[in-house]
Image (cartoon, rainbow, N blue to C red; front, side):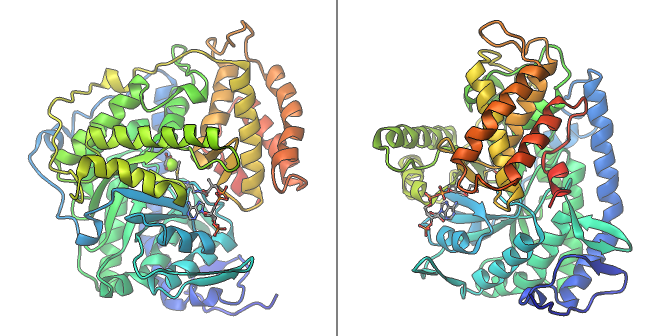
Length: 532
Ligand SMILES: CC(=O)SCCNC(=O)CCNC(=O)[C@H](O)C(C)(C)COP(=O)(O)OP(=O)(O)OC[C@H]1O[C@@H](n2cnc3c(N)ncnc32)[C@H](O)[C@@H]1OP(=O)(O)O
Ligand SMILES: O=CC(=O)O
Ligand SMILES: [Mg+2]
């Protein structure tokens, strides 16, 4: 493979291979923006990550979150976010998916109103995925993206979904790019490259640079993104307020700061999304040492569980009070091929999920697969009719307290099947991730980094919690888990399409370490990233 050459700004090093074509993304001007933002904001990112660690320690010691006293005036104030641009008014169905070229084309053509292209939960952030993802974005924005694969030709339809980009969260580094000798933020890298290459082109085409911001834990983390937006808009000479961002409320701590997050981003906000899978994971992570906390089998924790219902309703009420879109999350159900009965049950699950969100007042919701767009659209249209959204629907009847957000039910059942399922899915997902694929169908469900986090976090917690007892009376222990890992690994290898890859053996070892180590890995992607 020949190495293309690129010109680096002073103080920057790139350790990833520069394959032909990468120079179109890694231009000197684009890298200068990456370096400028990194230098300006990396110290604050590090401070905020340190604040997460300090807060987590206090939670481990028994502190419980509550709405902040110092920001009561923001919650009580009468303000709204800036008007939403036309291109983001109608988001009844949003499809999501990794930045793979074929999937980008299929998603843009899917008939959904918008498409969140994902550098995060559904993507393994290896160097090639990140850079080829940026190439795909450049071609998608200019509508020139095409592909010949397996005898099929892919190109864009005339009408495509509005593009929204999810950069990586604050916890992830981009290890292939060093500024002044240090790794930079993955999120800043993804954001800056996308902005540099596409923002002006998107504006010229009647849309704009739109983002989804993942995994934040406080309004101060949202303020950091807002300051990055302001500097970037200045650097690129585009009007302030052009960038719009929807924040995923997918941590229990952010649920206590929804108003404050919207307020920080009010000139750049396009609402909030209920990122249910990371949210469940965050609850387990933050209360992992609480002797009273222990959730039932993963499959039993749903959007109608008390704490999830409270979170979903509070998000909706908060958004509409601030004239902001409220977007629902993802049912992990996907079409099931070759089994019409099971498929009908899965489709019924998606229908119920979207129907509940639409009836509650949500303006749209996520789907994982193009085969779900029409069905989800039908449920939103039943409620919205021809209206693009229902932001005017207020929910004064909703009153959610801190205790409601922390009402962690159900606690039972925890079953052997549930434990085995978590282990099987965890190993399968980790193996696939190591091989470069961050989103996979496992047992007919969509699995990505967020769903896999729940699986491995539950196993860790059930080993340690006195409540981690199976419904047959057996206490979950490290020995039981290690034995099950041995038993599940061959089953995973037999079912994964690339099951003969050594990645699955490695995944088994990593999963075992993660579940039995006394330290709880903050994110599973952190140790995994060091392996790729
Ligand atoms: C918790 C969260 O963060 S949710 C957000 C992150 N997760 C996601 O975005 C989920 C994305 N979804 C996916 O990756 C896939 O749908 C999977 C892995 C779940 C299932 O994949 P598969 O089993 O390969 O799907 P399947 O074989 O049915 O695909 C049929 C076609 O639809 C395409 N397709 C499937 N899902 C998507 C998608 N989300 N976007 C675009 N195209 C898609 C496939 O590429 C395939 O195209 P082709 O017929 O041209 O070859
Ligand atoms: O990103 C979405 C989630 O559910 O997690
Ligand atoms: Mg998530």
